[in-house]
Image 1: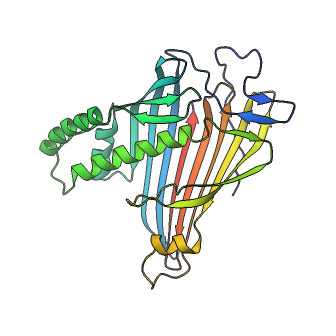
Image 2: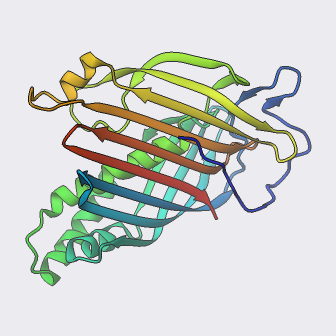
Length: 279
């Protein structure tokens, strides 16, 4: 599946000449040129769906507003913060309302290298303590049967996935229309064992007028890997695929990104879609 990307016009601090796009060979190197205290606002849409035949057995949609700020920088790194503001999820049951209350106001902090590639989230303990405080408050207000600890773990895991998606291509250097093949961890697989899969990466488009480019990444689990993902012999025709595409500005800021994960058998289909869009 391929998508056409649309985005609103905006102005970055200073782009006098292209810093990452090489017109001579249409190559791109994804490098972040971010200023201290520079900030951008994004909307994140997340959709998860399960189907059995043509019947929808579960459906979840979440919308976040997040402010991403460069809080410190050096020659070899950036310190970034993600601050979640408006959080809405549906259907509007009690569990989703609790999720929204726990997410709102959270801030994740992490380091990248000089290219903008993710290094390490540094305030996981601080986030856990903030979630525990919210849990203590929510448990007094809600009479629902819910594992708050499981919900807190899910929030932390999902946020890591979004941060990884944002920085997925930073540090890459590619030539237009050439496909790169390598082994990498299977996206979206949440078991403890690491799953390596053949990954394809390519530079799909370069726009010299807007100083933007589109990179894409695709993974498809092979037969041996599928046996680990779907250990039951009764499961027929299993498939696990992931696809990611991002439009990135020459400054290193993301314009638009979409990630899709599909887990499919003869009995059911599970899909995840995450869109990160500059406001």
